[in-house]
Image 1 (cartoon, rainbow, N blue to C red):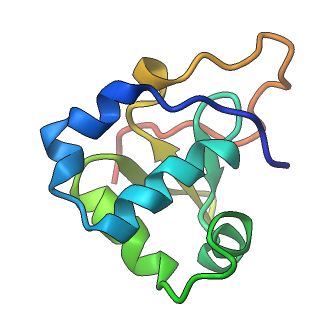
Image 2: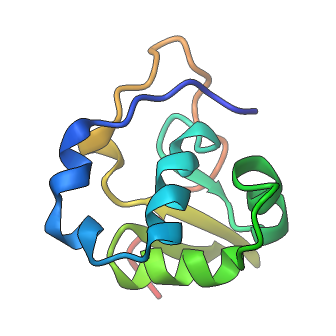
Length: 111
């Protein structure tokens, strides 16, 4: 389910963010809208594309990899299922306290 999220203006002056391609920057701005309360989502590029950039000719898996290499995401697996954690979530987002708790397991730092 899509959620209303704010993007802090500081992100546009972040030098690490500036190193990303234009497509990756636009994609990153769209991701909080599909992330859960903890900044997590299922790692399903086809579904993520549908939810973020449905009208654009982009390879979402490549954009996810670019954001992972840039330190903006962690892609991980738990019990054979793939997930994504937005690494700057706590700095950039303040989810509604009434939002449902995350059902996605957290990244344990192994892997």
